[in-house]
Amino acid sequence: MASKHFFIFSLVFLTTATFLLAGQCSAHDPKVSTALSSLCSDADFPQLCLEITKGASDPKSATQMAIQALILGATGLQKSNLDTCVEVYDDAVDNLHTSLANIQSGDKAALKSNLSAVLSDIVTCDDSFAEGGDDPPAALTKTNKVMRKLGSNCLALADEVHF
Ligand SMILES: *[C@@H]1O[C@H](CO)[C@@H](O)[C@H](O)[C@H]1NC(C)=O
Image 1 (cartoon, rainbow, N blue to C red):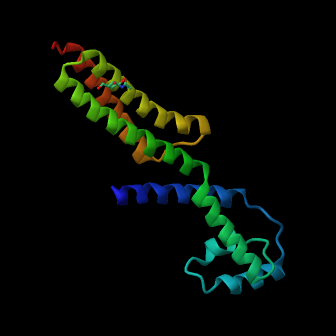
Image 2: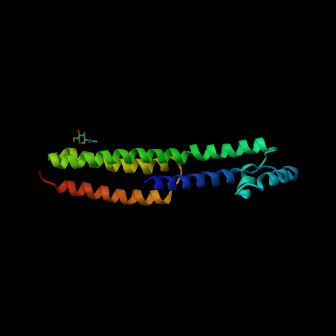
Image 3: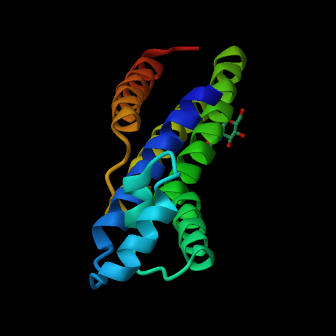
């Protein structure tokens, strides 16, 4: 589970970094470029270092820019969408446990209501991306799709339950 979250976060960060890079477009100063080349030459990812620190005139400003890029990646819009998904899926798990209890206690109305809440949790996760104009990570889209089908089936089955 933890590694899954990290995987999603990695995807998010890559996406954000790519977005950031695409948005970077500063004038080309050969002197600065040379200085940055030597600054970045010791980095593990020199090309990325160059692109992230474009326009920096010294190691201090380059480091500040590199830190800003990380801050952007760590606090980006997509991450807040993922936070929403983590939150609503936690809520969905609670509602699913309650649904099981509803079956035990023979409360059909509560069962259907709790299962509907589960479906709406899943939709909320999808919508958080739709509203932000971002595509969710592919793995999440896949999960949501299956979750919707499972949730819809649960509701259909619950409809047939007679206590
Ligand atoms: C879920 O079921 C409980 C009863 O166990 C009920 O009190 C609660 O309102 C239901 N939740 C929703 C979201 O309908």
